[in-house]
Length: 89
Image (cartoon, rainbow, N blue to C red; front, side):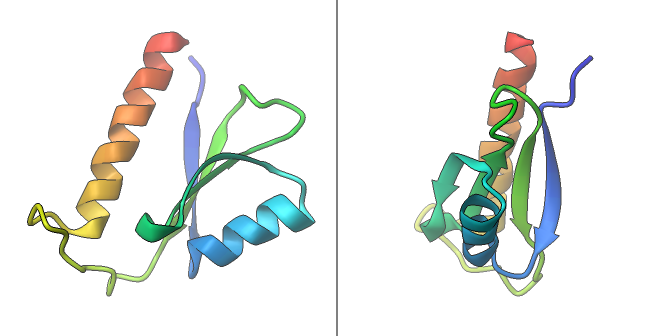
C-alpha cells in the first residue's frame, strides 16, 4: 500500500504554494488559486506522496453557483483524485 497524498494545514494555500515551490524546490502537481487548492510533490520523486496545502480556517464557507461550499467542492475533487491515484497504484 502506498500513501498517495497527505495534507498540511496552512493559513494561506497560495502563499504556502509559493514557499514550497520557490523556496523549497517542490514541484507543482495542481494549483487552482481560485479554489485555494494547492498540491505539491518532491522534485526527487514526482510520483511519490503529494502534499495538499490545505486551507485551515473554518471561515472559508463561501457558496458556489451550484449551492456547494468551496470546501465541499475541494473535498469532492480531492476524493476523486485519491481514488484515481489508488486505482493506478
